[in-house]
Length: 274
Image 1 (cartoon, rainbow, N blue to C red):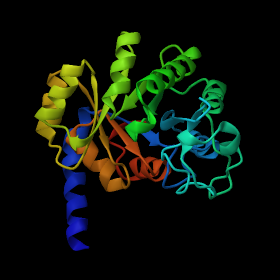
Image 2: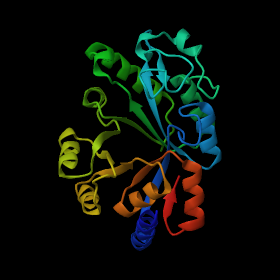
Image 3: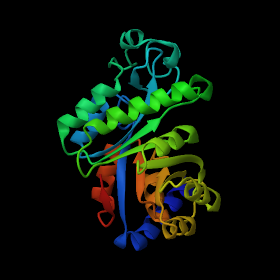
């Protein structure tokens, strides 16, 4: 306990030195999955009421080609139903309820919600195309085409709508079909020479890497290479402060309300945007 407290204090002191000239953007991961019912309208609405205008979400495709907001391929963890999303129909999934009693959200509903707000400025749409055998090439193309069309249909001028993934196939397809599309490469590795080089080789200007193993020097190098760095996970205030110290441009958070309240009360010198 003492060691953890010392580490947090050290991080806070270090951040206070570097954050004076640094701005960091926080966004609500799955609508704030550790505070709210992840990937549901109530979650996004709660984050919105807390002042967030940046979000992340996950999209899968049903057996009959409908795009649904779910992180896992199987419904078991988050709903009262079990089954593989990609093997179920829209009608079957609409009968399910989350374990907190909410409806499963489809992409059209999320986009309508975003449109109704009018001031959301940042959204990451993660391509959930794993396991890869559920998305063979033809199905992957159908998925990407439908996702791109619906997301971009009513995109507000000036807003950043990103397509993100750790599955290179979908990102490559979007690049080829829609030159200039804004993307972020997700990796389970830290920001380092390898992941910086991979982004550069793929022509992707945003890197989503893990904090574990990331150094401030590596983030600085990524910036020098013209990359925007987003770090994860964001499960605690300590994660948020570490990400700031490392020099991240963007930080996801699973606890949006707690982080925002902490920043206001304990770290007002951090130039945080939500």
